[in-house]
Length: 329
Ligand code: UDP
Image 1 (cartoon, rainbow, N blue to C red):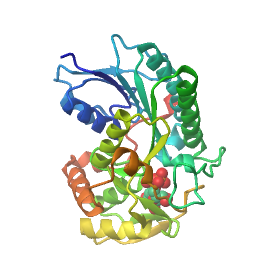
Image 2: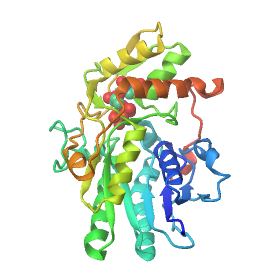
Image 3: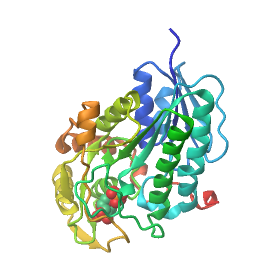
C-alpha cells in the first residue's frame, strides 16, 4: 500500500524532530522542512538514510512548494523560547502569520489536513488557573512576548477562517511547557538553563522570587496527544500539557537533587510580562482523545539529564551558537 505523506515544518527543532520520529515509526513518508535558524540537523540526522524521509531547507514565510500528494501538514516551525523571540522578533511574527498562510494555502491545494502548533502563550499572563480552552487570555500585544503571542493568536484565527470559509480540515493544539532530549541547551528556557548551569558548575539563576508556576510535560506524552488530535475530528483548540504544576523554586530544587550539584540558587530580575502561573486544563483532551500524560517529572527529568550529559563538552559552552541578526528582516 502507498504510504501516507506528511509535511512537518520546524522538523529540525525539538518538537518537530520528535514528530518526525513518530511519523516514521507509523510508516509515513515524511517531508521535513526547516530553515535551520533555531533548528539543528543533528536532531534528524539519524533519519536521512531512510527512503521514506526527505529534508527540504526552506523558510515557510516564503511561498512553499511541495511536489506530489500530501495527506497531512504539521506546522511546527517557530522560534519558541522567550530569548529567541527577543532576538528574532520579525521572523517570529512572520512564521506564525505569513508562514501559516502559505501552509494553509498548500493544504487547500493538496486537500491535506493541517494541524498548527499553538501555545499556552495565547492565554498570556492568565488570571484564570488552570486555563481551559474557553479562556480568552490576558496578552500584552506590544510587550516582548507580543511577537510570539500575537502571531500564534493570529495563526489560530487564520486557521479557523480556512476551516469555516474553505471547509479545510484543521486542528489546533495549544502546547504547554514541554521538555525532553533535543531541547537546545542555550535557548534560555528554564530546564536547559538549570541543567546547563549544574553541568558547568555554575549557580542556578531563578528569575524573580521563584514563586511563578509552570507545568512541565514530557515530550513523548505531548507527541502522543498531538498524534491523537490530528487523527480526531475536532477542529476547536485543544490543550495538551501536563497539569502537574510547580513553582520555579521547587523546580530548581528538583534539578539540584537530580544533578547533585553543590552550587546554590541566585536570583535575577523577572523578565517583563513573565506569566505568574500556568497549568493546562486537560478535561477536553481526556474526553475527546482519551489522552493524559503518563510520564511523571522524576522519570522524564532523568531521561533528559542523561541526554544533556551525553552531549560533547563543547555543547555545554554557554555561548550563542547562531548569529540571529541577519535573519531579522
Ligand atoms: N526562568 C528562571 N531561570 C532561568 C530561565 C527561566 O527562573 O534561567 C523562569 C522564567 O522566568 C519563567 C520560567 O522559568 O518564569 C519558565 O521559563 P521558560 O523560558 O522556560 O518558559 P516560559 O514558560 O516562560 O515561556
